Every structure is written in C-alpha cells, then in structure tokens.
Image (tube, rainbow, N blue to C red):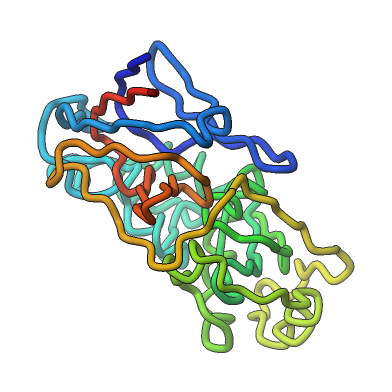
Length: 264
C-alpha cells in the first residue's frame, strides 16, 4: 500500500502508549499500527505550507520568502518574550497575532533528555510535551498571554536548560526527576509580573511512547539527499520515527516535503 502527501507534524492522542497519526489531504495513517513493518520513504517534491508552491523549504515548512513574510513564522513564535499583541503592536499580522498570543499559555518543566523549561499554549498541553519526547512534565505557571510566558521562560532558563538533546532523548538515556521539587525550587525566579500565576499544587504528567527498541547510536535520515529509504519501524518518540538499523526520521523537521510512504 502506498500513500502520498505533504509532511506536517504528526497528530497525537494521549493514551498508553501515545497514539500517532500522519495526516495527508486524502489519507491518514495510524503510525502505531505500522510498528514492526518495513516502510519505504521516497522524496517527491516540495510543497510550502504557506503558498503551496514547489520551492525548496527554508524553515518550519516554509520556503524562504514565505518564512520571512507569513505571520506563522514571526520571531515571537520561537522567542515568546518578543510578543507584542498585548500592546496592540503588529509584527506581521496583528489579527493573527492577537489570536495566537492573547490566550492562556503555560510555562512548564519537561524531562526528555534533561529537565528543561518551555512555553506552550494551554490548548497544546500535553501535545507539546509529546512532540518533545518528554516522559514526564509539569506546569509551573499559567498566564493570560504569550508575552508573560516568554519573560517567565527567560527568567527561568538562567537556572535550568531550555533545549533538548535529541540524541539522548531518542536513546532513552534519561533519569526520572521529581519535577514538583524542581518547580518549587525555581518558583523564586518567576518575574514579579507572573508570580501571581504560579501553580504550586499540581502533579507530574507521565507519558509512554510506542517504542519497541531504542537506538544506541541514532543517525538522522536526510530524505532529500538520499531520495529513498527503506527500514523496519520499531518506535515513535517525539516527532521521530525510529527504525531497526538506528536510522531516525524527524517528521517535524521535514514539514513541507511531499513523500511517498509504502508499507511492505
């Protein structure tokens, strides 16, 4: 059976284990059902997630021009502290930015390769944690806009990591941490603008990923360079497909590529 479509990040469903779905325009695949099957990936062309044209993808699924034009790729997305919609100031499209920024946001601690701080819209909990491959996470503040979440993250990342080591995460080279204790220790660094939004009585969320075998030395697949790859799917974690030969393929990093997926 062969499916063709443009890659976007996998949709997830919180379960034990987490359920993953690859959604195309006319098809969708429950990726969990493909575990222990041989899969072939073939690069077909590009399809920018903004304009839909066959132009090389630059970042985040967009071609270069769209990346610098679309409101969906503003600097405030990667750096929430740069959000300005709460001031009525436009970056690229004020109406879009109001919808995205002026809603409840969570600052959280997650343990994927190590304990890290991050920001997400409240509506994206626990999706954001799943996408990062975190096996445990906890909220630390819930604020009414993205700016307050951003300045809180900036304050906390002086005392805890804000990046995930993807290789360590995929190898499952991790230790359980008491995130409630981490939250309590870090609470003193919350900026005064956000201190009233501190969440001090919640519990960790634990996540179970559908992985039969973790790679010891994960090697990243560049499907544009190789054009075609076949392998036995043995796990899914974060937004990565994990294959038996220790090849890993990051769906999120390849958004905007049209591929054929054959299940053997």
